[in-house]
Image (cartoon, rainbow over all chains, first blue to last red; front, side, top):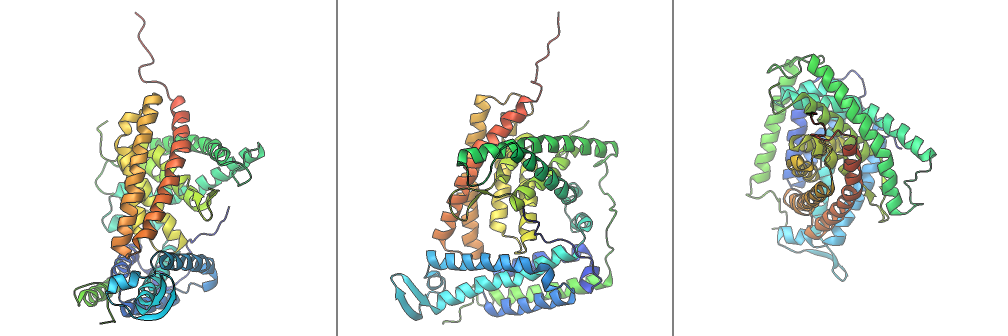
Length: 276
Length: 185
């Protein structure tokens, strides 16, 4: 079982000092703009901003390099996949055709396809540093209070905080049960038939479900006793107050976001077309 | 006790359910026999929890679990598939009163209803919503995303059909049947 996962790294930096709510808002605006625009120039500028924020946060590449390796593989598969299935997707989007190389059969190489796939690639480059920052610089117990502050119902915010709290427990339970069942001869690997694999999965999941349902009862009784959900609002143990720094960062992000949207839709379509 | 949209039990079930979904999605890979594709046990748990705790829990478990999975991989959030997971949970949960898993009455009839619903939900989520949103949001080639959707949907259907049904049967057996006690006259 791999333990590779992004998690909070405690370090004094301006990015860490921002309130979690600010980082959430920035992340969502960032993701929306990156998803919308197909203009390589905007995406390039955004990735420069993202990388700058990454450097300011003091996160070391070595701490997150495993993510980059996985991403590179994932991106390569996706880009090749797009080409394999639709080598002329770009031509279809931009409505023009500039051939670089005639290729074999339907696998031609056009500038349009190249530009389209560059955009798809840049979209990842834009979102990755910001997504990593969100995970690495926000303390897990601040997640719930931040979400509540940006308007998420506190019951839902609390459910998320329960999830983050219980992931390690569930993971440990799973490992214990899975090892115990393997010791009794249950196999999930390719050595046995698919049917046996699924039956093995049931043998592991069943005790996990029971322990989880028991846990749900215990926790909900404890919360019920403490009158969870009786009031309209609640306070949070770890919430950072909004500071002037947050306000400045938010205003700047909003302006940039508006500018980005304006530039994207200036020509009437979100597909920037350098070919006409 | 007056009933609210969010009962405490549902909030906790959502939290723990999403944790289970996350762990299974993130760390557990059962080879399916097709190269580079794994059987995703997370959807069996999602279907079971939606079947026990209802549509809102199903929606939120799919949403929270999948968002966290995506975030900890570092590639941001792949919204089209996140939404598909949430919709799957929602649809399976919508009919939770019919399965009667909690009442200990999960028999042949309920088993059939549960599986008809989950197959329909898988179709809507993976062949309908996920690829369509992929095309609308990311402009991915149609052929590629529909094939991906078909493979994912097919595998998830198989996992829920076998693993999900067995889990529901097993859990339901431990519940006391509704109305199993009668007053001696």
